[in-house]
Image 1 (spheres, rainbow, N blue to C red):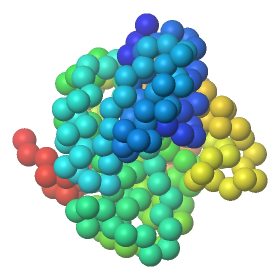
Image 2: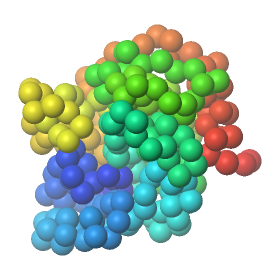
Image 3: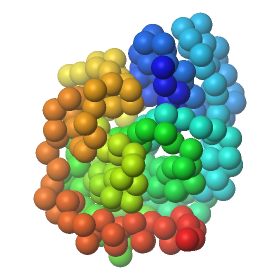
Length: 247
């Protein structure tokens, strides 16, 4: 059985994935923004199996670094945490647009800090909105309207997954589209159930998953522009600089 860390796993898709993985006998490292938010969920899910809780606010790179120190060795790391920004949302602790900071910059930094302690898989989360997102390495983390900010952050996650797959060929690295499911980020009219999204994430974390960009077991459509390795390299370099990553 595997040990799997899932960011943002006290609610929604992350919590559903954790529940399914515990049911299959895996150990899950839950992540919450705070102990107050995380402990009740850890207690509940702990009845299903082996659970450990780590905390840290992904909107603050200093807390991401502290989270990395506490994470420990894992077989898979799932970058599930995400936010849909409200109009006029406050920026991150370092002054970046909040969806960019939480959905993309934090996963990038966390990956850089812990990848040597990940034994098998790195999973980013895509979205059905990836195709409408734009990725410009010279314009990362600046304010934009909420829908655009979210779409751009998810397109960026796919680019990061492709770039990190090239940086870390010994690991299985990719992204999964969890589908349009009913969560706090999606409308109540979404056709899918949160358990469906959780199943896709659980499959990527510990199941028969090929890597790449997928929707469940099926390949998901990757916009051709995002497959450009030159773009990926420029994005990785820009993200390294913004996250304060040094060789």
